[in-house]
Length: 362
Image 1 (cartoon, rainbow, N blue to C red):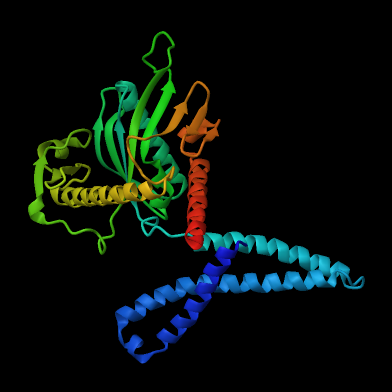
Image 2 (cartoon, one colour):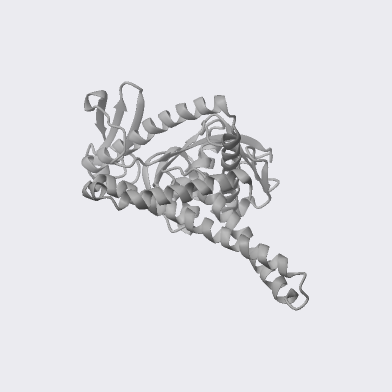
């Protein structure tokens, strides 16, 4: 393990001692807010410190086993212990590195996935429908729940724009790298001469705000419009002004919802989407500021960036941020997205680890 990581872990061990002392004080126990805050930190620090203690123990076991290798009578047992300790140390090293990485508190949150057709006309709208299918199929494989918040259908069955809410375990953490420009290269169904066309969609993934920590929006900054929802839904959806559009006047950000049967539920959902978009705007501005200090291939979420190409003639998916190429495009479009998600998460972890090392040596 690298020395700077050992230093970080030693700080956890010291902090655990401090927390044990603080949580034993009567004034802390009397202040429930402070007690709960320190208790949560104690649980996190204790988990890291206990794994580090195990790492230190197995490191000592390995050193002891290696000293016994010179003894012919003890060599076989020493070799077994040395192999066992080395194997466990590798696992502990990787586990501790993951535990030290900065955690995005939004990773566990549900997410809104917004898909918009871009250049390419009808083919772009059809591709937006394909992307929606890919994400919802992937969500099903993860045991997540999907609900369409708003949609604008195209004439050929795709989407000009669609917003889906996905709820489940670690949704935002898995999908946050999908934000950006998605380009498709294929022969459209309407193409009579077999020519390959290129079209594009933009995807934005927004963490659903935690109601307790969400930014506060002044009601006077909002303009709320109601209208009749369009699309499928039977007689009810065509006879009532249940759809809601909310505009945040200071920023011009707009959110709408027409999926619910009541104006009240649509207003609540639209307000959630609006809040998520405003928070994403703040996040993007902070990311842009950070990127000026330390360039990163992942994390800006800039919707104008071309992040991925889907080449159907070659059966190839390429993620340009991490130079990942997979020749299993058809299965990916059916929702087999885990290889892509895992590769992006691993890249982020490596970037975070490198940043920790730079920070430790600065």
